[in-house]
Image 1 (cartoon, rainbow, N blue to C red):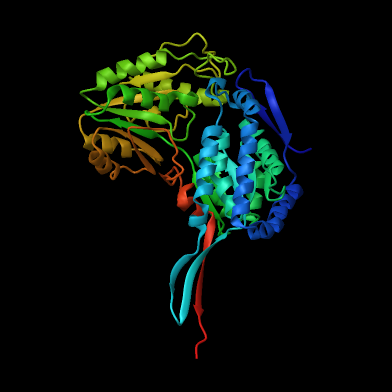
Image 2: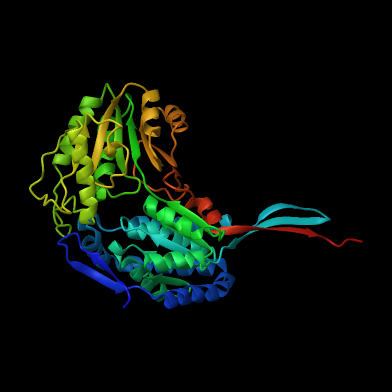
Length: 460
């Protein structure tokens, strides 16, 4: 009997959804259908592909009233925040807008003797493995540009958000995207690795854990299949002495706590100039004490449960170890904290980089705050990490932010904002955060391959 994937709702621990995984034979057949359909899809005019993808995006938007409570059931985000369609649509729309220019031939030169140019061709079949924390937005980062560029797409979504890929496929098919061009599949880890190892796909895009990314690279080893990864993060915020205190506190704490801290680019450690440190900590504590932890289906809830009990256990463990080592926890346990998925958000001070909570990914509602006396000290601490996704700098001086940013080992530098994905910029990381790049013109370059033409003309 085949394996069954079960989505356990963090609201009450019940099974919210379950699906059978595909057999090995059915999985390979799905990949082959995608390969067979790819040439005809790529042959369609670019504008036709754009229009069909954007119609699929709009069809997802039409489902939003069903999607929002469904997300609350699957991964615990409060319904008051309205789902993900704003970012989902923004990212797809930007990639549609820049497609023609991004995918245009690169003209190298032409004269009476030679014509030279570089075309950008789709890889073929793109395999997208998407995470549960922002399940629609993370998926569309690759699905939209991959389809627009002429690839077919096979999507495998996280078990915690089991129904997301199904909804996306239904929406895109209803808009006219052929069923074999965009497929949602339910796979176990073994079959996933076997598909990759047997070159069923021409490019793999994975968003998830470091261990998951390593498994993807191991499966692809020796196949020359491209693998793009966006993995863990331990993103820092640095508040300089000339920063807007209120704006910095509001944004950095929201960046640390929104979605119960389950954000790829969430703020997990904060460094504050000594002149503003006490005021920052005081304001941060006041904000977090005002949160309402509870059932995400309740419109009054501002912070819901973590997506799974085991995720909450990891965060509790990091907090307990830090406190035992001398850290100070400033938030008393909320009455709604059940010792399971419902977890009290926490502010920690007197932390050091010897503590796991300041070094390992927490992916939960906890942030450590440290005092610093100079840019040099802040840069050293920000770089003292195995990860490199984003960094948030707070200052009134753009040139200073640029100078500090140039010295930080990270994929994106923010100034006076945090926890945002700008589709005009490349979404990328370094170190254990992985490699690759999504969105922007670079996203199209990663989802296509260059093909050079050197054409000698017959003269005389």
